Length: 177
Image 1 (spheres, rainbow, N blue to C red):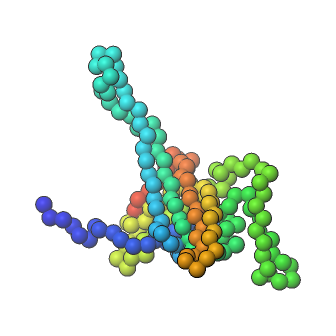
Image 2: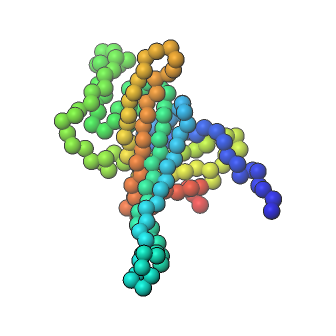
């Protein structure tokens, strides 16, 4: 059996949050450490008395998808879009002066922030068939900035997938197919 070496994929990707129609997308193109897609199925074994502890079947009862994006840009505008409960303030006379406040006094439903997330490989040979979409993904941000000469400031944002109104969670390939 011959191997199809054209199906071996390498390289970084571009991540677009709010990739659907109507929103203003947030694009992450500068990452460090690699973007990671996680997908896992949970299942339940079916057992009947006649076979004791031997499973006679297994049923998928859940699917979990997430994407981890370590982006290497310190951008308050982007941070304001991926930290639920944050407020970006710009100085009225000097719009380059900005501040991001994070409110810890509210309970936040992440579904209110869930939007389409799209991963697109940056390889010159990549096609629309190489794209991956989470139909509804909510951001969770973990900041651990280390100020020294050995590395860049990296903001780790994890997007957790939720099913859309039709039950779709994740898609591989061309969205126009």
